[in-house]
Image (cartoon, rainbow, N blue to C red; front, side):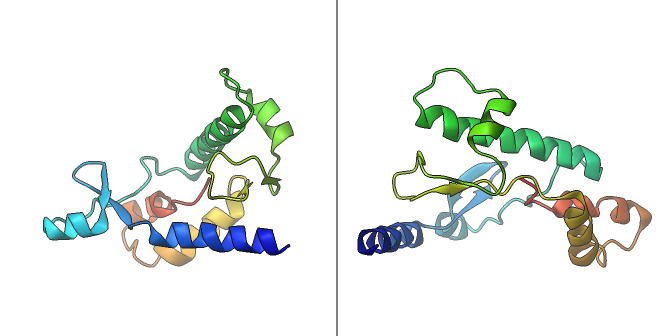
Length: 147
């Protein structure tokens, strides 16, 4: 237990020591301080789709692809696992202890955000700013944590 606690402390320290990064200049990931020194604003991040069903479908594909990267590289596979194989190896809500990131003890698959939770977040967080009909339809574009 002491070794696991020490490893967690080291992992947390490693994450905190990393500089914050933001997206600048049409998609270039830079250290936040570098962007500030160049006096440039970070790019606005939003989803390309407005329709919640399309966003959730894209989120499902992104979630599966991310899991394929973790599972495939962990098992030394050169072939991508199918979504069904990934689902069996790492179902939603479960920890994956063979993380490809050395400082991480494990990775968690939260699954795709449920539709009702995404609708509620879009309504509560971004609905009030969407005064027009067009803005109201676009409120889902700002929900970035679907996968």
